[in-house]
Each structure stands twice: as structure tokens, then as C-alpha cells.
Length: 458
Image (cartoon, rainbow, N blue to C red; front, side, top):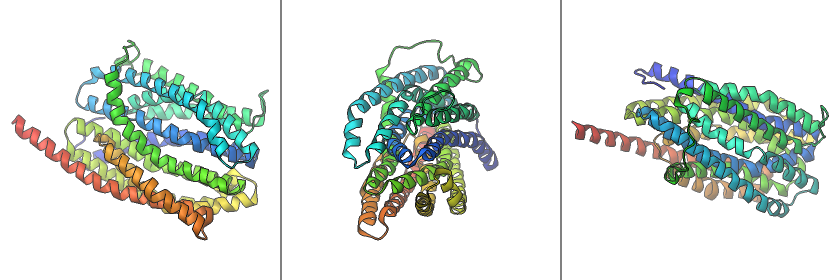
């Protein structure tokens, strides 16, 4: 990152940072896309089982990732304030914390997975696939969370192309192991949808090893000598990360968990509907990478400018990011409408499931613009280290407004299973409106704060 003077320079720098993030996020989502589409070709039970397993895993994954994303503004502001010597210590503490969180997730999963699956009205074959898919995936939790911390360090330096390259290198690994383990190729056992979990775990280890090599040996990361010294565990630093990261993680958790809750509530419908819902959600999540990537780039840019006390520049980046996100939302709507049938055919050969997928994707069009505001604003607020109010906004919007609205439309109107997707739109829209108001408050507060510090110094 570097200081920019004009709007054109800001747009160029934000795009330079954002496009590799977008490709990286699409690549990471493509792994789940590969899991889902290839499992669907193995059968409806496999697709439904992976759907249930993914729905239980994704809120945990996104929530923990949100906690660890606190590393991005922490490191960005240190670099912006020219305190680079503090960066290695922060990164190593983040690595320690990620391993501790991974251990907690694995232990909790051991005790709660069976009771949760037994409480759901699933066919035995679907329940079996979901359980063992998650067991396979669990083998990759530690490298996935450690990689997230190292990625925050890489991205904080504005070197987002590196994470893009790493992710693209890992995609063929994911595809090959999915093909081998789902369909029993190259001498591997035929595991169906279960094999997708083990394939993801292998891929996460590959990603971690490649990332470690870059951070330790390639400039501009190697001069920081992140791995030169193994610092002692610092509870105070963990506390700093968690105070910032827990609200971020909970905000993302409440947004992600409503999608998972909808999938779990879908268990009242047929296996075909569950499979179609998951397929449509998986496809639309690829397009969600557009606003998410903008949000991650905005966190880096805004955090850098706030650290340097250039609030007007931080505001300019926020405005650019949101306008661009709205433009991309319009593009996403067109893509969903035009590609709804060929997209559905990627997931299934079953005509009934395909019809359901096409209808679900029509409903997905309606929450694109809400996502285009909601997600980038979250990224801007994280750059300001403002995380507590977005957490409350997400809780209220998704669980008090969105989910009850979806339950009503699904169970008391003719919309049936599609009613839950109406609820998703309600929750996303409410959250976007709350956060837009909060953004104005935070920007004005930070401007006054910098003005007061300037007057005091003079």
C-alpha cells in the first residue's frame, strides 16, 4: 500500500488490490463448488449429504475466519503508522491463536456432531454422508486456520496477487483428489460425497505449505523474518485480536448461519428440494465473492489510511468501493438470470432437481443489491476497527427480522421452500440499511478525532 493523491490513483490502487482477492476468493469457493458439483454427479443423497455437512461447517468456518481477519486491520494500521518491527510478533501470535481455535472446534465437533445430525429428520444415507464428509474435512482445519493468518499478513502488505497465485496452484490438487476419492479413481476407494471432505483437507495442507514458503523466502515478506523467532504466547495480544476479531467473527457467523439455518430447516422438505437449494446457494455464493472481495480490499485500504490519519482518503476509498459493488451487483443479476438453466445442469441430471434449482436462482437475484451494500460497508468499518455495532446489526437483521420472515413465508404462504429465500433478502436488506447509517456516524467521528489531534499538536 502507498499514499494516493487523486481519485484515479485510488481507483487504480483499489482495483490492483481487489482483483487478486476476487480471484483468490473465487478459487477458494471453487473448491466448495467442485465438492458440490462432483458430489451431485455421484447421486442426490451424496449432494444432500454434502449440503447438510457444508451447512454445519460454513458458519463455523466463516465465523472463525472472521475472528482471524482481525489480523488484517491490525497489521495494516501498524504498517501505515510505520511500526513494521511489531508485525512478526503479531503474526506469530495470530498463528498460535489459530491453532488453539482449531483444537477447540475439533473437540466440540467430536461431542456435538452426532446429536445435531440425529435431531434432524434426514434419511440415514444422507446423515451418513454428512457426518463422514465433516470427519474428512476436520483433518484440514488446522492448516486452513493457520493459512488464514498468513494470508492476512500477505494481504496487509497489498500483495494480494500472491494469495491469488497460491489458490490457483491448489485448485488442480482439489479437483484431482475429488475425482479420485468421490469416484474411486487411481486406486483410491470410491467414497462418494464423503471423499469431497478428505479432498478438501489435503488441499488445505498443500495451500499452507506453499504459503509458508512464500512468507519465509520471497520478498517483500522475507525481510520481516516472521518465522525467525518463536515468541512466547502473549495473552494480551490474543486479547487484542479477540476483542477486535470476535465481533467480526460473530457478525459473519450470524450472516452465514442464517443460510445454514435455512438449509437445516429445509430438511422438512424432500431430498430433491434440499439438493436443489444447496446447488442454487452454491452457485450464488460464487457471485457473492464480488462484494466480499471488494470488502476485503476496502479493509486493507481504509485501515492503511486510518493508520496514517488520512480520513478523507479513507472515505474516498469507501465511496469508490460501494459504487463499484453496486455495478457488479447488476452484472450478477444478469448472470444469474441468463445462466440459471446451464448452471443447474452442472449440479444434476435429475429434471425435478433442475427445475427446483432454476426457481431458487430466480429468488437469488433479489438479494444481490443488498449484499452489494451490506458486505462492502462491513469491510470499510473493519478498516476503522469498528466492529461491535455491525455485530448487533447482523444479529438483529438476520435472526430477528430475516429468519422469522422466511419461516412465515415458507410455512404459511404458497411460496413453500422459496419463502426462506425471501427471508434471506429481508435480513440482508435490513442489515445494509443499519450499516449504512453506522458508516456515516463512524466517518464523522474519526474526522473530528483527527482534527482535534491536529489542533492539539499545533
